[in-house]
Length: 103
Image (cartoon, rainbow, N blue to C red; front, side):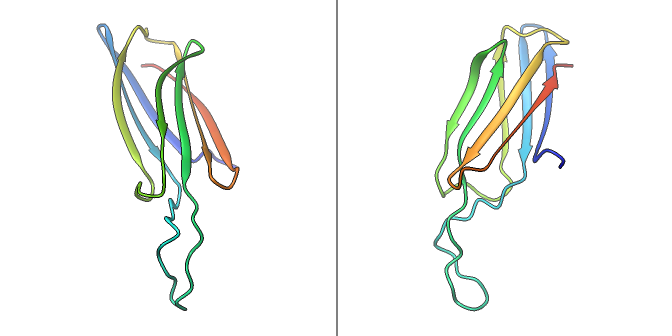
């Protein structure tokens, strides 16, 4: 199965800019379907970006984040060719992870 995470990391001098798009329904549990039944909550609870085994970005999310979230941030201390590990876990126990080389 293909990863639900698409990521681009670009080093420019001392700073590395990271952009990521995660495919996930991010259902809040408060929306009804066409039959009027509540759609059960299904959302990412923890998102982590790691460089050299150290967390550089951690997000603890709840049901208020929109579908297919997009994240953009920058950090210092990486070089071109280094690997960045991205992982998430949702409230139903599902998870995904991937790695990306910094360009």
